[in-house]
Length: 214
Image (cartoon, rainbow, N blue to C red):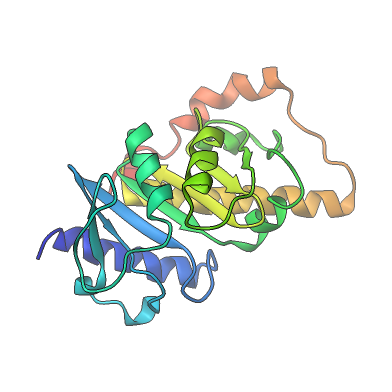
């Protein structure tokens, strides 16, 4: 089977995504790149019912080459990330706090130094209908020099050199969004200055790198 190992890994992380509350129902999608091919979740299939043969394989330009089901509606967003970054895996989620924050702000401010794991304050891409080329363009513009993006009134997307890294960034992103949302309910949170943030960004960026290579 083409990309069998990657297909099995995608199912493992889809089930984790559901268990960790990063998405609901059949929403969200996951992909892994090997060379010019991308394994990606099918559209509208229950994660708990997925089998390796259900996972689709597409080319870097979005052509469907293997798998019986229709690929995710977010193929344009996944392929544009691969085409414009060094990503080897992409995770798109619909987590509660990230989605809430994407309706309120233009950027997650420097609420915590762990934002350095994502490249810095995470921007919110302007709204566009799901699955569209417009959404893909908005996503990659807002993701410049970052490993993550919030999608206005939609959800979040992260990438990494492995699926483990991309997924870890999704969990950190949701945690940071929750910190900011909950702080705002109590008052106006203190933010790190650019100098304070930059002073620790390098050390934080290296945090857990060895453990995330799996």
